[in-house]
Length: 169
Image: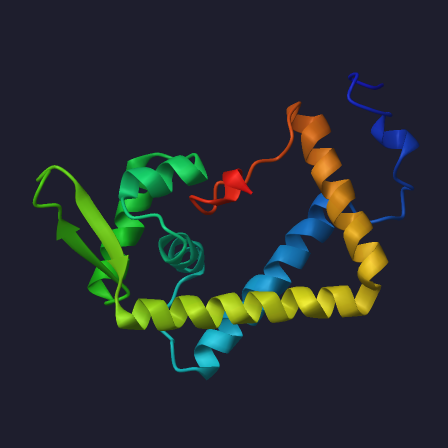
């Protein structure tokens, strides 16, 4: 039975087909593995799966735990331990804002910047392989379809608060 968001599941997916949710998860995992492999080849071996997203956020303008937490829609505590670990492993540094001693700014160290760059290039390469494997027209249609699905499921267009500047584009 449909819940008003579209056709019932039984009307859309043949029983022998794998679930979309698993395909999407595996696609994301494939990109993640490509990124981690590229980091390993470059000698960045002390990286954890959750670190890659935080490296990307920090390289795209996020500069406090509160800002990262807001962009990911999680608690500050959820991010804090990972940042602590990244500071210990010399990917991130903390600096107290002299004009507001309560504010602790985060920045990538040179090694963090290097890791973020490697991860970004590996992600872009994986996405280029996806487009090459299915063709540009299918890739555009898939991206549009996924955006529409998110809009229907959430009742709003997807917003990506990955970068400070993303919502302005």
